[in-house]
Length: 479
Image (cartoon, rainbow, N blue to C red):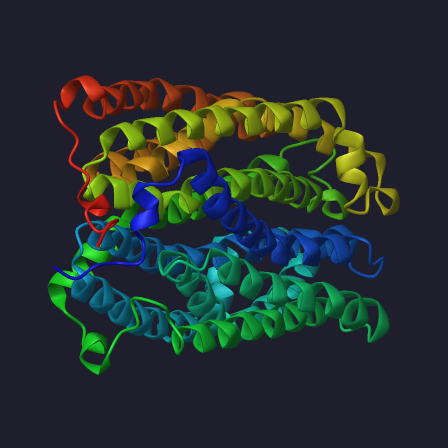
């Protein structure tokens, strides 16, 4: 049977492996999150854009998440499939999955780009861009150029976990970091120097995305152990189906976030119009701009959480495939503790330093209503960060275990049933504040369900359930 170069995943200490794989993944996702956040920071501090530009950024943000959802479904699914296959020493299947994933990411990017360009006005309106004429104008300009970069963005994001699965987490990190650094350098030049406004922010982002895609192509031409051959690029129904199934949780997690943001943006537009302050046209964009900023901070935290869990997918998948259940249990324990700790730190920051956080996003150039609502939003919307972090890590760990049904069900419950449902329901009773309450309530209810799955998973991977652990990955140590 063919050997793999990933056998160290079944031998090295779990903590050491988590650090090796999770840290580059965290950095990659943080850098990816910074694309939109950096745009928003520079936009917010440009006096000729201000909260109108911020609101426009909030409108377009979920539309980039749709692209990310498709990309991570392909990439994370491929990463899990490749890792499990290598654990079972089924290298041919691993290579075929990589080839199919490359093809699917290219096709998906081109199709989504076309849809965005053709139906841009309707899509912007669907996500709350018609809150006032100035916000719509900025949204349309920003969205047009972002849409042109969608194929590059999707390809780079899809290939990032594939590169990690090939055993190169540092290169995956570097490719994303390079694009983000380019974006950060070009943003102030285009926005403040050339006065290109929303176009400048978008063009800087797209150039960075192109750089990441180019680096990904270079790596794919020089892969270490799962380099696909020509026939691996032919779409195979079974391989592609299994890949997408394993990545379905990642897709639903992201796409449901889009549905939640669409619901939130429209509830903000509806109930903001009934507010004494935000019902005035000159202030109408403030709630949307503020909630977008709060969600960007949440995205930073979740990038760390998802990075920890997603970085461990190759480790979980390999040890699961090799039958090393005690190592999987140890990893799960360490992961849950780490994720809860991240949530605790984030909670302290949002509750104690909301003024400082909103100050980064141009509060000095806005009215006091902007700051007051932002402080309130930070403290309420993110008050259950610990549960949110544990819930998210549970989704991904179950996915890495090959438990697509459980992982998908939990994701749907959180993002659709609670995320969208509560965002639509609570404002009916609490007005604009109901939008803010929807997030913590959803996280509490989801944790109740997640706790049941966590306990059941622990029982399944408990050493007591396994009389003898076979370690086929160690057989070649003396060969």
